[in-house]
Image (cartoon, rainbow, N blue to C red; front, side):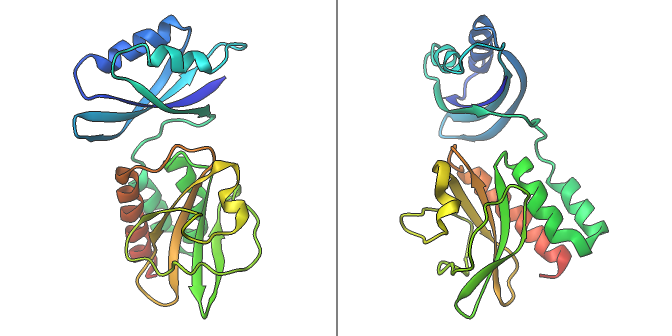
Length: 219
């Protein structure tokens, strides 16, 4: 079984190595590491890990947190690869085939952000609808997203910002970024079932990607 482990750890030399050693002692094999962000003396890393069949994922938490100062933010099954910082490749692909650009964006964003699904939503005249979505995006009825238009990327909190119920099922963490500056208002919405929460650095990446693709497509 493969898992994605998000850890918060002191940003000091040797700490990640100590975590890797502890995980190895628990029988885990690290397949890849991605630095999500570094801030205030702490680092947030995503570790793609393979665990022998029959071993519970709890052993990953116990092993990682045996290193002083390390906290596990989340652990979840993961079947992808840590293909980090591939935004420019996606932009290049969209620029070469703009007719299918929105569909390509929605389909690829979950992989880039290790999320479950993505939707490009539009709001006009008091109603909202999708113009593109990934294959795993939840089915919903037409409704309204009153928090559109967006001035900047944000965490979408279902207790504050109304969303269709399927969007928030399975403890899904939600983030949204403005897509284009024209009318009607559009946004790129990303859902991450089971977490972890989107970090400020991820919101910045989402904003950057949405802005570039919108410019390429003339949105």
